[in-house]
Structure formats: structure tokens, C-alpha cells
Image 1: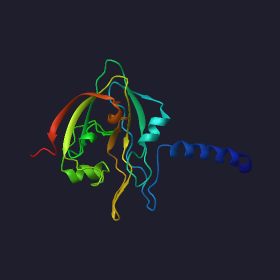
Image 2: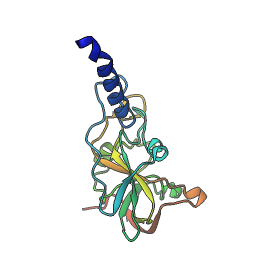
Image 3: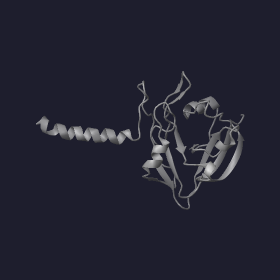
Image 4: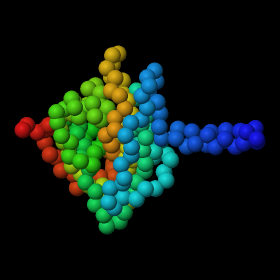
Length: 188
């Protein structure tokens, strides 16, 4: 009796694993996998299918980006505030791709670890607040592990981040009404 069901079980297990593999990845050489869950989309944002955008936001183990995620689109007539901590020595990074839904809090090293941001990637010393343009798409999910140099590894994080497909160099940004909130973290 078991022999008749074995192919069905194998097909079901294979389908289940392949469905998970598009949004989750283990960390090479460790027992770590994605941690946390993708938060529900914020009010006014509906989940949509956009495999290409999702693929841009997901990172391989030890490479940063997101470990898993879902794509959302801001509906007409809705507003969504997003925040970005960036490197003031590189002004062109002010409208980069990585944002958060909540105003970032210090200390800097804790924020860096929670969001898997290597020191060599950004000084994380300046804060901006913008709104997402109606109809814009975003990817929401927890962070992938990141290797920062030879010995420093940030593990996957349960903290949800927002990936926006901004390309400021080509004047293609999905945010508007941006405000410079100054140096970060703000002294107590």
C-alpha cells in the first residue's frame, strides 16, 4: 500500500520545498535559516505578484538584502511613510533601495546588526523621511545574513526591512515629499 503513495508523497514534498525555496535560504556553513516572518502589509498596501522585483530584493546567504519577502503595491489615495538611514559622505545614497517603516532608533551598532548592514557599506549617519508614491511597489521582509570582512558575520534578522526599486541616478524613484531629518542617531 505504501508503494502506491510514495510517488505522491515525493511529488508533494518536492512541491512544498520548491515553494519555500523561492523566499528562504540557509546561511552557508551554519544551521541558521531565515528568522522571523514577513510582517503583514501596512494599511493601504496590497500584496501583488512581482517575481522580478522579489528576486532583486532577496539575497544569498552572507550577502545581505532580504532573506524572504513579499511584494506590495501602494493603492491610489493612500500614503505610506518610509525612513532611510544613509551615509552623508555619499549624498547619492540618500534615495537608495533600503528603507524602514518605523523611524530608526540608535544606537548605530544595534541598528546595523538588526538590519544586517556592514560598516563598509554605509556610515549610517544621516536620516531621511519620505512618502511612497501611489502605485509604487515595495518588498517587505526580514534580513538575510551578511559577511562583513574576514571575521564579522551578521546572522539573519527577524527585523523587517523595505526594499524600494529606486534608481536616483536615472531619476527613477518611487518616493516623494522627502525630508532631511539631519544627523543620526539623534543625541538623547
